[in-house]
Image 1 (tube, helix red, strand yellow):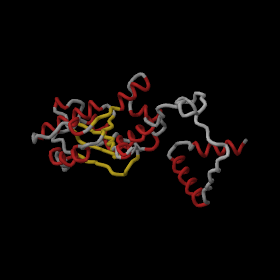
Image 2: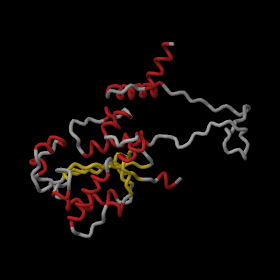
Image 3: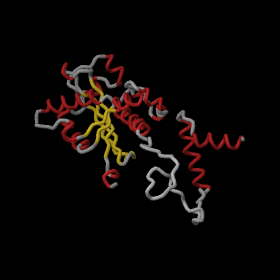
Image 4: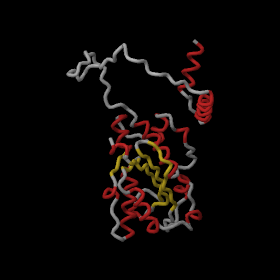
Length: 246
């Protein structure tokens, strides 16, 4: 239980100058979002990097980072140690991990200071592979965000690394929300019956019901307004309205 509570996940994404580090392409942005025990902590790692090369316009159109904007940003070797320390010991959650980790390891090797490779300091979960197992074929982050109805939670005018990491965090929470096993087979509930449902004593003392205060109800409605304004339909509000209509 203690290990589960201390489980540290880093949801990670990068933006690059192209698709192949062996062709000289470099990382221009790293975005990381921290989760502990499946909850966002608010602690992020985000950095822009000068790739020391000119990007083509079609690449700029994807992530919105211009050559002029990146000109005064740090070089990768200047941020490598801080980046490694942030991800060290965590489980990395990456969509299409082969791409991002390939770039990261290439950059670590180029620093030429004996830096470890990503798999030496982290475990890696590829949500692209998870989506293949779930849907029968690999799915894009856009598809998953729409499927799990979290696409409206993040403004993705450009595909920035931190923006995509934040979106992937919401996707990952929904992808892994499933219960591993639900056994509803009938049984007598005896101690030796592992498949049965254990019945509670009908004469037990009723549990107290604590009603929400007026202030708490108002705060709840204000939160639902925020969700609705972002384009979602709060299921709690819908259920209440349908019940009232009936």
